[in-house]
Length: 212
Image 1: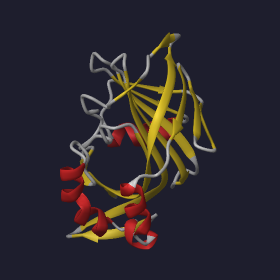
Image 2 (image 1 turned 30 degrees about the horizontal axis):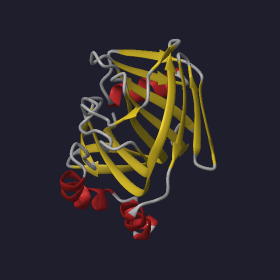
Image 3 (image 1 turned 180 degrees about the horizontal axis):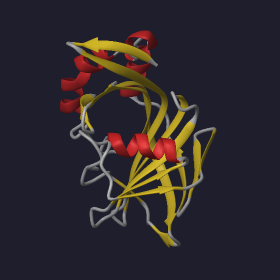
Image 4 (image 1 turned 90 degrees about the horizontal axis):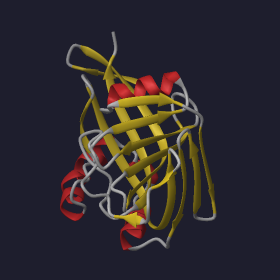
């Protein structure tokens, strides 16, 4: 966590290192899972859901993380529930309140190898995210690597790896969400969506916000 100055305003820079999984289902529900190893709040995971009817739901493990995420992104409902994400040999197992999910990832493709080739110290910098924003828009429609979020926040995504999601099984509030499908339409939590093709992305997210 660092402080920077923009004009006459002091801003706080927060950094989150981890993984984001984005997947669609044949029921129309789209799911985005954040699995964060290093953050200002300690390690945690959260889940963002958008149902077929457009309702956006956040599942967060603590009130503190719920407050931060809901002040950064837009939701119609927020629930504080236990969120447990376990990753073993390419398999994610997620238990988050009303959601039980299991996904498996495939082998890294060309884009994943290209992202891995970028030095980590470079990929984590907001300047690099700004540089890659237009290429990301062209190659991955709906994806943005920088933008404005919340009332007075800006965010940068520095991707460092990506792997396809091959299979998903998910149950929400006792109902199966069906089979794996593209993330379509794009999710509407923030300034951009996850890739249309279900994928797990290694990422450093940087958020700046005004400090009193």
